[in-house]
Image (cartoon, rainbow, N blue to C red; front, top):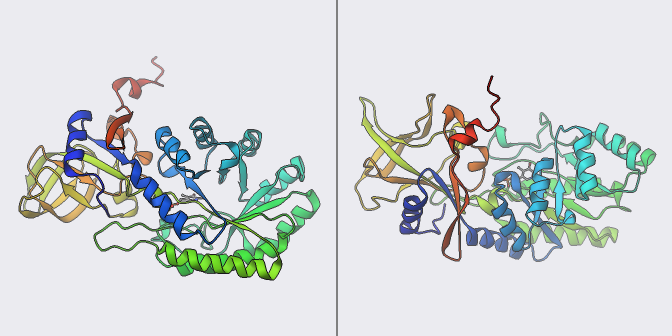
Length: 404
Ligand SMILES: *Cc1c(COP(=O)(O)O)cnc(C)c1O
């Protein structure tokens, strides 16, 4: 965790736009992008922002402006990316379990297509032959990531085509003439150990030998971990960058084949840029604990309940108050605990509490559960805050209702 906006800035945004509100610090995104660029400067690398983590078109436009490309998992994300100014060539479409029409639509829009199923590869090859190169998502059978829910490369995962089906893939490629321009893996999220990427890369090089004529890139997906607590570690991208560069250059020496390396960072780019500001509605002392009850809940930030993820919480309204232990809960009528036994500067009713690391999978996973409004979103760029999404209104809740 890292605080790049001051308490005063956060308080003034909360006062102006109300709470709960998501705030994104643009320059922090650029800083993270630059760190990746520097770390992989020894390779021919491209970075595709995994936009499912945060899709506000203003954020997409900003990320397009700093030079990144875009990874999309649905055709609507592709459309948002195009609206935000990405060129089709800058977009990689990595869907899973979608109707073939959605893939066809991606092709019609001219974006890079990542195929994660043999039957789809077969249909695609039959329809388009070698006229439209594709990337193939492989499952390297590597267990990786912070926990099972965010792990995708293991043997039970629904993602990708097993590397053990390589003979079958080759058969489909040969009979349909489909051109394989890329091989992809994405083994999970919050990978601390860079060895996981390197083991994956070895597998990918092994697979690459089957498609050397047409291959242009290897996509190592994402999984870069960011710090959530003080003293928490982040994936060592500098060390990873060095080792990936060495691996690619020895592959090139051996095979004469120059390949690009692609990555798809989501969290790494936007997690730390985001702050979620809520207001303490009530402080309630029970026989067991002191609850700080806030004007939000898992309808707005589901990660603590869904993944047991840790978000640092700060009382920006009373930063010098004495520290006390709280259980921070939301107002949703269901178990709705953000944090147990959390040391916070004394919380008074009306104080603003700020959740850190709220850029990725925060607003994006929010809902209208309990008929509450989804929060507003604000972006801070060059020290200026601007509203980039209004808070819902009653009209939004009723928008699609068909009255009898
Ligand atoms: C979710 C996802 C990512 C991003 O993962 P992070 O952990 O947010 O970096 C990248 N690639 C694919 C295919 C994904 O589904």
